[in-house]
Amino acid sequence: MADVNRTNGGGVNLLALRSHNTALVLGLLRRAGAEGISRLELAERTGLTPQAVSKITGRLREEGLATEAGRRASTGGKPRTVLRLVPDAGHAIGAHLDRDELRVLLVDLDGTVVSERRAPLDLGAGAEAVVGAVATEIERLVGEWVAGRGSAGAAGVRALAGGRDLAGVPGPAGGPKTAGVSGSAGVSGLAGGPKTAGVSGSAGVSGLAGGPKTAGVSGSAGVPGPAGGPESAGGPGLDGVPDAAGVSEPAGAHESAGVPEPNNVRDRAGTPDPAGVSELTGSPARAGVSRPAGVPDPVEMAEPTGVPAPDRAPSSAGVPGPTGVPESAGVPDPAEAPGLDALLGVGVALPGPLDHARGILHRVTGFPEWDGFPLRAALERRLGVPVVVDKDTNAAALGLAVSGEGGPGGSFAYLHLGTGLGAGLVIGGAVHRGARTGAGEFGHQVIQLDGPPCGCGNRGCVEALCLGAVARGEAAEAARVLGEGAANLVGLLDIDLVLLGGRTVLADPETFLRGVSTVIDGRARSEAAVPVRIAPGGVAEGAAQLLLAPLFGQADG
Image (cartoon, rainbow, N blue to C red; front, side):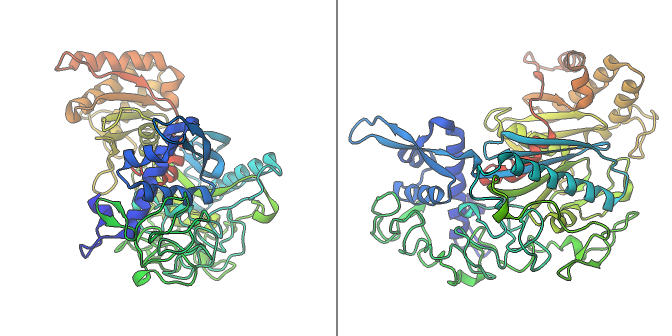
């Protein structure tokens, strides 16, 4: 909590705390499922006051993210009202870019897949072709889903542009309004609206109720926040006046750990936040897609090696866009295409290495020409919604951790053998990406000196040996080699579980389970051998969690 509660100057960041508390409540609502959970239980499990929980749930109900699930018998007094998450109140897209195939899917807030597409992909076809192919398949995915729903959703396609910021929940890693749940008002593409700046951004983004927003000014037009004005659910706010749930809250009531709800920060459009601070994250807002302090915008960086970066051809708004990659077309206008509610954005997973924090690719194994390409920026320009980029193995590991694999605070390795070999590591319940987000290059540990050449430039790598055995039709030998690498990892990190995935493993799961388990068991230094299982779910599902997990306070699992 220290990193959530404190500003750089050591003071309490009340706005970030509020967002953190909302994420805690949303997480418990999701885990409660259809049976729901009462406000009293939410207060007990989060450590928040009942008044704070009532305000948060009031905002969530106003936003359509939570609803009543009935009543539950109480030990005394009237029955308790039970609340549950509304899964179809928001959606996210996950995209898995393999070396030869693209898989994109749409999931609801529960992570349930509601639509899916597959298409061939040549990762070596060049930046423009790949970005165009990914964007086209995503646009088709959304268009098909909307068409299939017909008039089922009165809200229409409400990407966060011009929509809502989902009750002030921070984006991935709790950072500034970048690649998270923040919006991009007036941005074309999946948002469907007219383009005003050519890029998604925080300035001009509407707030909780879609009201106007200027840089550093929170939205929620006509919906005053915790300064005593009317609460978003219609009930009065703080300072001794009953809140949205009719619970009276004294002035300065504590949200958490003795920290009061910010009484000097209003949600009303036109009322500035303190020092131009963004409502969602407590970070300074600026026009365009905000980046973490000290991190340059990928668009402004040097040209990538080997592959031309998106040429600086003016887009319709005069902002550079990828040459030959047209601005979004094919996604219906929100007012004319009901069926899809708030779209959080797109999570993109592909082979590494890459820079997760900045969304920039490095020398992708087998495709060094991608080195330095700003994939996140290119896709955000094309689609007009937030984009998060991560390694395929990390995305899959995140999805597995969110689903409960490894248990609370557990440690496991997800080994992905498909067109390449890599690992996603979850240590102490959180995805481990390393200091430069490059952890998990499992396939490039050398286990045979002077062995066969690998696409990374070395010789005798686990990946080269595994794929060579597969090419010869020797699945048992590939499993044995994979087991040797896995046993090294188990001995190094003392993990609790090994999960196997990827198309090569899934083509012969029993052989790989048996082969990997045999090696790990044989090299075990204790009586309790580490279990090996086939991983449920896939990379694209995990990629969608890059957007969903932060909403529920699980940015790293």
